[in-house]
Length: 494
Image (tube, one colour):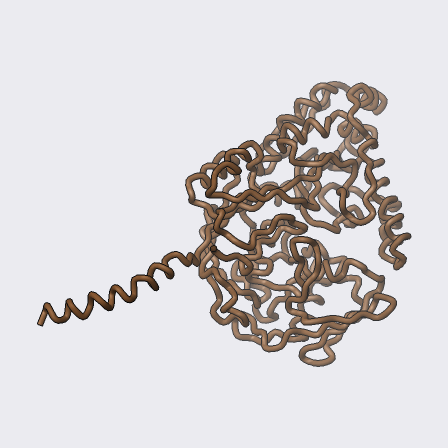
């Protein structure tokens, strides 16, 4: 009897073996690493770009979707039309979509989300929604938006994380338990270490989502980032600090290396209301003490382009202003003397945990010392930077990369962390927003770039070039990154 059963099992096992082998080869999990841990998971309530890195297009979705090449695709909106004056937009919504708590996605939820964004002072893109003068749900699947001022960037901005559509009943809890319409749900979060996203089986197109589970690890130290990749502990690391190890990764057939463009601006932010930094001559002296090209070479290993204003090459209306407040230590010393600043001038330099900031702090402090400025470096954790520097403005100088596109309007934001208040810029920004003609609008954008360069609101350093290192078998990885997002549903294993 025993022999007979064994004889039956053997051919059965043989017939299953090929199928089992295929199933084992078809990997459905991923370990993704990020430099910074998000302080929360509601992108409408916090400034950290790391929030969008986790939730955008994964847990929470938007009406439109920004592709790697900056083009716009439908997402929760199937289609849209606009009036000739570019002020009234009608969006047709995707039918049959539900939130992860079972509530329906409809025009009412879009109306709630955008009205909440306009009223919520913590949404960093509040101005986009404050420009809406009328928002109506004409039926369950149609939303009509009327703008005060024409906005040629609206479709792009409605694809950013600050425009996610939230479910009204659960919106208040999104910071810790986000409820969206996306293909993944938050499974767990071990603060300081990692979080886990699980595929939501109720997603409208779940069969297209190849990954069943994604673990997101937080690794801020550059050496630890390299070690995790080389050990095979991480499958994908977008925007990794790998410039110094690039040749090693390129030579290793286990990896693919993608080098792409960005819309980010790495700057030395200056507290414009702190004395003597409220004197434009002192701010100009700080900018002139810094050799941008040397910073790019020393900190970014050459993976960056020097900039002279809060705008980058490739952005609409860009003008090259690197000659404004260009590197000139002698003139920097003369400006400090003219401003009545006695040497040495001692300033705090707060450094968040990103490698570019910590390494940049040493390089820039050495440059400032040569003109009589002692920059006292203070390394702070990300949560400390967000609360102390960004929220409380308790700093003199800091090094930070602003990664969002279309954020020149930050100079018109009252109470923003760099404490810059300029009626001239505010009037210019209002004029930009009220101008429909593209050619005239680009001219005004150039004027805005020149103004914040001339006034040295910050010392503008460089536009970073992002490096992504991933397993050679992983498909669907972004090369260029107009926004900080990790589109997990687009990833699959070869």
